Length: 385
Image 1 (cartoon, rainbow, N blue to C red):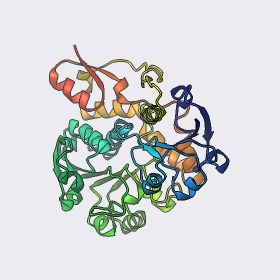
Image 2: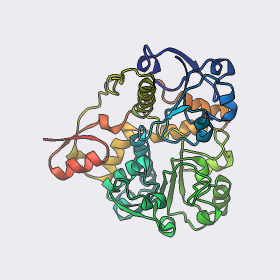
Image 3: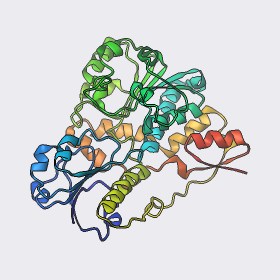
């Protein structure tokens, strides 16, 4: 098999050993000379797999994307060619959940309002893998979490959500924190493209916090800029941007935490996506697959923490932001991510020399069952002493 893959999908030489010949590409779209003989194509969300690409790949039999979303894949065109498709749902959900946790703690620490968090209401827009991961962590902080997801509400076969599931849009707009976790859809009864349009954005105020770690076009960025210029915009955390990698640079000074679409890019999240599509490809080819995440990750030597020393919101915020310095990603974005080339380069080289690790590498010694439950819900590796 000739496997063509994005060079930023990690560990593929190890994961696909013996599966065939592996060729890597570095731009957003793979070159025609590789596509001509490709049997399998492994991509990230930056690569659009449409009819134009498929015409260049006459032998293609399998497409895998190391991402949760599949909107960059033209599924109808792939089905017409009977090309097998695989994605990585849930692979980086914990990474995105921790991004949201860090963002909320960073913003309220900056406000000097960490102690107010248990008084606040959070609307999670989209109760899929990443939405639930974010909601679980914010609920463990003591916030009142509810989920807006009309399609899920109609689907009786979905697993239950730990928190209220509803379809009341006005309740979302009234919430203290709004965190977006939906795929980008343009059609159907509940399209998400520009879900937060000028009308929705103008109903928000500067005491609220709006987080978008889903897809940039879920929030109308031009409308958002207009609201900011008018002076009554919510505090903003944007990891995704409309028309990225070419962002609206005038919006950047209005954003408290700005990052280049890296919420899901922990070492565990990126490698988890690679494992899922490598396993799917090996299964498609009738080959065994036994590699797991732990065997490919280096050990993490963070010292054990005592739960008693993490009793206050400030102590917890200090630990989370020490383990994931979200402000570093914000500085890098402002310094080097304003151009399309710079934005793409930040994603490609994200923490290359010092990979971001997840909180499940941090062991917390707990003295009672309440501490144990809370720190596990926050994503830590908690144990009872």
